Amino acid sequence: MTDEPGPGGDKARLILPQLRLDDLLAEVQTRLEAARATRDRVHALLEAVVSIGGELDLETVLRRITEAAAALVDARYGALGVIGDEEDRLVRFVTVGITEDEIARIGHWPHGHGILGLLVKDPRPLRLADLTEHAESFGFPAGHPPMRTFLGVPIRVRDEVFGNLYLTEKVGGGVFEEEDEVVLTALATAAGVAIENARLYQETRRRERWLEASAEISTTLLSGTDPHQVTSLVAERARQVADASLAMVALIDEAGREFTVEAADGDDADRVRGARLPRGRSVAGRVFEEGAALRLADGSAVVREVGAPLDLEVGPLLVVPLGVGSHARGVLTVVDAPGEPAFTDGTRRLLEAFAGQAAVALELADRRRDAERLTLLEDRDRIARDLHDTVIQRLFATAMSLMATIKIAQRREVAVRVQRAVDDLDDTIRQIRSSIFALQATGGEDSLRGRVHALVDDAVEHLGFSPSVRLDGPLDTAVDEETGGHLLAVVREALSNVARHARAGEVALAVDVGDDLTLRVEDDGVGVPEDGRRSGLRNMSARAEACGGSLTVRPRPDGGTALIWRVPLKGG
Image (cartoon, rainbow, N blue to C red; front, side):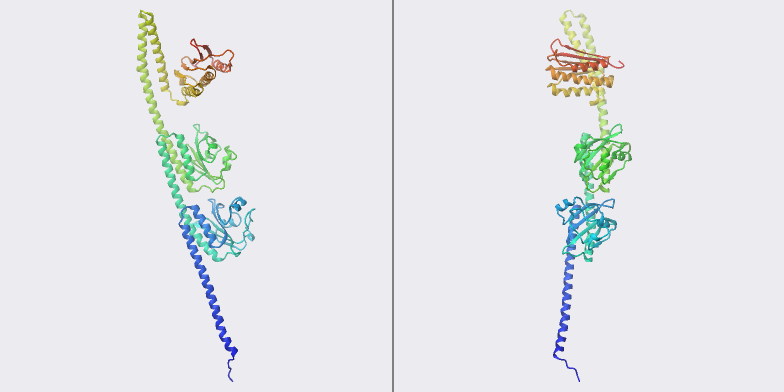
């Protein structure tokens, strides 16, 4: 008996192949969709690599890397954390997906603790379905958006770990898969190359700006520009090239005990300009003595030590010496705002080179000014000798001849005229001698002679006219410091009295140095009123008595007042 297939058996044999074919077609369709998705992701990855590789500005590169990472793995939030030179904390945080309001509520960026710090300590890819359940999780600060799923990979620049990519909250509520990790790792590899290129370009551009600034400083100094203007230019260029918020140039005083901030540029520059820093207990003193730069991630503590304003905002700090050894002149400091990344080692090297060149330029400028000053003094000494050896001798001979003529003059009016000519010659000789002493003086504005002239110049505004001034004798060499101080005080008080009370149109001031120091101040004003205040005259009289001298105030025959302040010279 043979088995004959029935109608049902034939139908089953027809349906089974059809089902297997449908399964195969469905599997092929699934694989095609997966291949298409993989192709699309590869295309997206290539586009991201091209996008970040075509940019040379580091900040833009970091922003594009973060945006590309979030897009490639469908993450709602993305961040790129940059590791500082200390290699134990994050110094910069670039984010996508978080609004400005959310950033404000968080208050500050993370420094690399918890899960983020785990990648800093162990730079390997990390994928978590729920980061809150991990043993390293510290939780979130108030105002932080909720986050659960997590994917992080390190970014390496050559053999250095530059930072980490952090992605959270996969769109759709799923978890990050192994494929996401592979794609993100590939992007991180390309990002390392792009970051290295951007850093090299940035370093090259910064080096060019340093060289330009150094050349500008040297050219400006050697062209004869005022050194105070040049130190201001040094501070300005240092701040700009270091991209800092504040730069200061502090120079050591002649005694070597303290620094003075001669120039400052940037935020709070007006508040720190002119500040004095003790050498013994300041960062400036340490850098100055050791001749080596000091770089701090937070300089607030050391700045407070030297008496800076309490509300002065100080973050990263970099101090370099202006010259080394016997040629050290001070320090150059750049400061950034709190929260900013520390100055890099490359910035330190460039600032050291810049400061060294600036110090050399300042030294050369000083030598050039010394040479010019020596030439000027030699020329003035020659003029003084010529005046003494020729002009004064000839005038003196003429005066002697006229004196002899007086004795044989028959008419009185002739004798009077000759005597007047002799008096004029004597006065001319005194003025020339005064000019000789002025030419031979080397103190400049700091000399007693220069300070008397400065007081007279200051009085012009109050008087409304310029007084005549005659300074006769070795004022800068024969008058000691204490007596000179009294003289300056009396000159100031006398001119002030004339300006306030005399209503004068002319004032003549004369200082004679002989056995005594004599000051005469004469005006054509209304005289000293009987009922006027005399506190100023009492002060001048007291100063004269303190020096063993006297003060005389008397009316002039032709109107006005004559004040004579006379004191003996010490050792005279």
